[in-house]
Image (tube, rainbow, N blue to C red; front, side, top):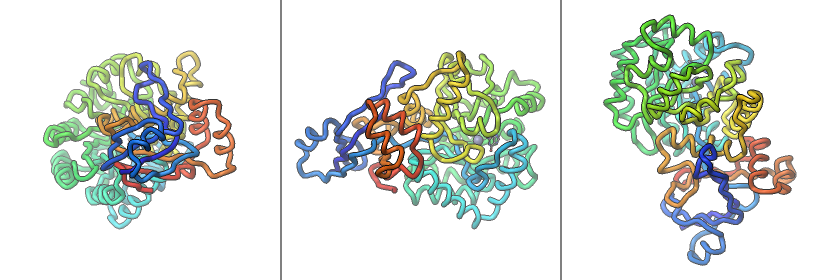
Length: 427
Ligand code: GUN
Ligand code: ZN
């Protein structure tokens, strides 16, 4: 019905596995009912479909919609709380704001700011840390559904070592989660994600109740934090003396599998990497957050060599914004800083981490993540303003890989001119 014409870049095969950037200048993508049904040189696609509407996206580049595998909805307004390590930052910046989500009117306003922030950055799919209050999580789902985004989210739960107003019980956590999942799971583009805050804030009983929700809600995701900061890891070890390591605190109750996404994992042991790989769990690498909180340099090479699936997250509000393009760039910087222990990232690696890898981590690889025939048309058009620095360097790029590197170096939300999910123009 519609042919999108432009320079299309995507990474259907992982560059960590021998794949390369797929680049087609003056491509045509024919989209029917939100699905890509044909792709090829524009002239050839047009010749076969002379009556279709043509949407001209020439100039700039068309990319798959970006996938954020770790971002906190209640933390939009605390972005920029720099200069504190994790546990200090949680106490002083994040958790006081999370307590404000008890006010549903406040939560509704922040949910609108949050969804708007994702869209402006070109994020079309996200795994979102919700709030500790079920009505606030309803606000998030409502807003995401209105906007048309693909969002997986859930109630954040913890029963120790948080401000008292954020605490729940295993029974309450279970009941609230089932009720929320009943309202939102698999409605429109939404799914439920079982979300204990982290083992430091949960007893084994709450983790068991989370596992029960995961068993009861078919197709639900699991997400939490792991191995982010050395003081946090020491505290978890002290709280779980009978467990082998931090990953084991999630593994033992049965929380790890192919729909599990653990954020950070900056300081894993080899045994933990082997466990994550064996379970098919994914890690959300959040390089801006790791830099802002001084958490450490992510051992990407060790993850890849152990066969652990890795994608990108912004981790707003420890992370410094919603742009996955900037996370790709920051990931590149941090691998460079690791020297011989780092894994040098090309532009194709960065795009893969920000799109296809995220889709696979969220178990949506058959629907989104690249712009192959059969995928949903989830896409963004990066088209800088005439004369701005990105425009100046992009028109002089040596080739598609060079152009994409320039996009990662310079593009921000202001350069994301249009956003589609399932063929619907959202922006
Ligand atoms: N660990 C537990 N909660 C959080 C959070 O809100 N942000 C980050 N970065 N780590 C966490
Ligand atoms: Zn986080």
